[in-house]
Image 1 (cartoon, rainbow, N blue to C red):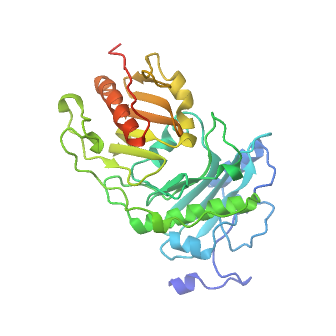
Image 2: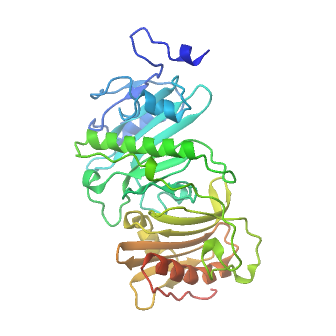
Image 3: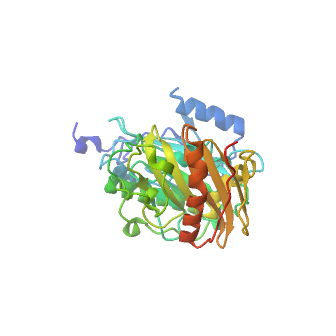
Length: 377
């Protein structure tokens, strides 16, 4: 079948073949139990269609009315025979202002994009660090322009501005909309065109959310200001992750080339040896205090080996698989993290963390910041 045949009009005069299984608007009140049951039926492949109260948008729009035909076609290389299924944006539990919703866009050629609206879980990195592993990866480019968000060729996320989502507390994560475009090949180059399309789409999704909430204004298209994608770094000796003076003690390990976040933004991440989305070694600085809130609880309860800075407000811990320090800087909370996946490098963690914190604090203007790490337990 040709593309022209794919886009032939339907009997009711619509110009596309998206089959909307569920629709709904944000103000639809649904209890947690009902929402969970619906999500399970729809997304579990049971083929159950749930017709929710439709909002002001026509049937030819997807993902809660935020994306039109051209927007979705751009995500699927110009194809328009895309099926959409949605769990409506709803209030998740009584008294909560956090939205919850899922939208899936599926191509008959096997390509699927999953969109979620949710408040980030204040546990480590979002939810057991899975969200942080994927969405704070060094492959993602900061969106810039004051936006709290990032994009790559397979992932994108953007926080709803606090003026629209409500003021974020010190222990909550921000409200975000994120996009998962499938499997990430971490040893390959980043497709700039695909990254740009995801960046553009996630901004339109947040703008749609804001319009539905009655918030004024709209976020600008970020694509023109995006820097070049991250690339693998050829390290100089004694400059781990491109940081002068930072080295693995004794250079005992053969480490693969790292990828480091490119462009100024909410995080600077250095990842190496990523397997199934989980880096074997990660050094990360979370500069935006709205994201740093995800690590607040962990910084206070992470481990028995507590660390503090000399003459500086902050707290953290060190253990065999991770060292973390959260400091109070001029811009708010900043999190510094060194993590080794398998826990086999406790001495390296203890050596790297104070040097990494000192170097990164100086880079972002939070220094001098000198911490003392306990020796081996």
